[in-house]
Amino acid sequence: YLRKGSKVYIEGKLRSRQYQDKDGQTRYITEIVCDEMNMLDRPTDGGPSSSPAPERQPAPRKEQASAPASAQNEPDDTDDLPF
Image 1 (cartoon, one colour):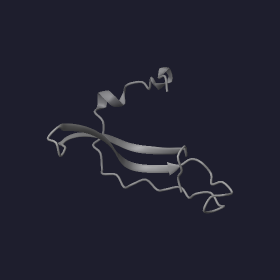
Image 2 (cartoon, rainbow, N blue to C red; image 1 turned 45 degrees about the vertical axis):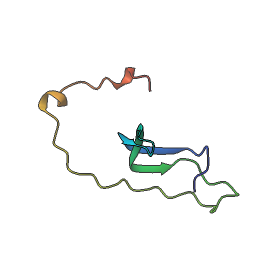
Image 3 (spheres, rainbow, N blue to C red; image 1 turned 90 degrees about the vertical axis):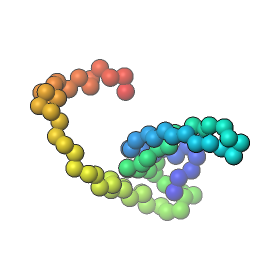
Image 4 (tube, one colour; image 1 turned 180 degrees about the vertical axis):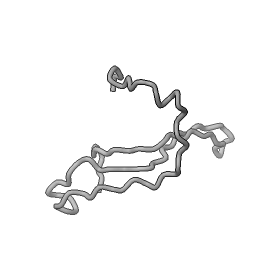
């Protein structure tokens, strides 16, 4: 389904942890905990199928507490973000 260089959209969170390797050295690792993944590229003629890949449904989310009233009244200033 995916090849090196394929475009994907990943939504989730990063998790960092440490462990001891077989030599006793402390190693650090960062993992992506994926909640949702969408393949953005369309299959090519040489691919396993000729139809577009179906969109995946997001993983069920737990109920989140509503934001405090002060956070709900703040203006949306995302226009000046560099991404």
